[in-house]
Image (cartoon, rainbow, N blue to C red; front, top):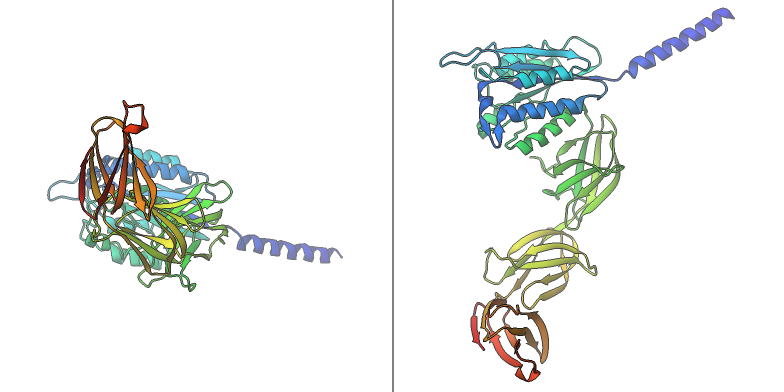
Length: 457
């Protein structure tokens, strides 16, 4: 009996041990390779590149503190030997803060004390970075390269990157693309995934994306479907909210890749999301849950067509005239579209009111998939009205024997310049100093497209 119990406990121990081994969480190890070369002293928008990079790195460390199963390390280059004409130290790269639990403060301290000095030995830094990861089971190793320049020591970062990938080290270089042309940026494609941050604001956004991607392998793909259920719609902003708190977590401009497939997004699986697709009108998808380590496909029906509203013969010339667009049968304004422009709308029917004098209304305007609905109206004429004295004045348009109010004129002005649609009008005016309706003047006039009518009362 005793021997049987021992056997049972032994089996239970082995099963428990085996289960704990299989479910042990993976540790993510991120090595930051930070550019301390002389070029980081360069001016960039509101500050020097090095100051912006320091600030962002400090903020990143603060955000990473407290994340479980994460270790970070810091390697710098170009920060030890001052560059001189004809002389550069291509071995100027050093692991300043090795991997260890909770060493974020050490990294922040090193970053703050950095004074850029030397050259840009990217290949040498990548090569030595391969030895910065102590041997350890169940880890995911990532390198994030932050630089403002390309290799300066005639070595081959591509060959080094290939060797590191064969060792299982995943490279996710982050490139500050300041003063770097397209060819220079392409030099980093052989290393891994590159990001171009041309402004301080894009620097922050890109770092957020890179860190999200480095910390997890959870991805999503948003299919914006047309009327046939095909994911062909694109170039639309999307906002992802934490559905519980309402906090904005991600903002993306939907993109199709070179194969016309929706781009893959890296997102945290820790939240239930609400996605808002910023079409006109918006489309919301709720209760989006991502499975850690898996790829999730999110679909939204967003079939779109175009509305093109123009003055006849005006082309695309600038105008301040606005058009109020509402969904058919609803009072809420969806969009104020300017005349002589074209915008996208979801397939459906809309009511449109053009804010000319007088206003022009179109009802049940049908927007169809991938088609352009064109609306053209006549160009305005101009009324130049000169009143003899201050007073009350109103304009009316005459249509089929019915007088319709257009607008009231400013009683504090004598000279009035008004754009009017072609038609027949009546001006009703009474001087302010009079107290009898008998002094009312009703002046009829007509105006044509592009015509200027001058009236002196």
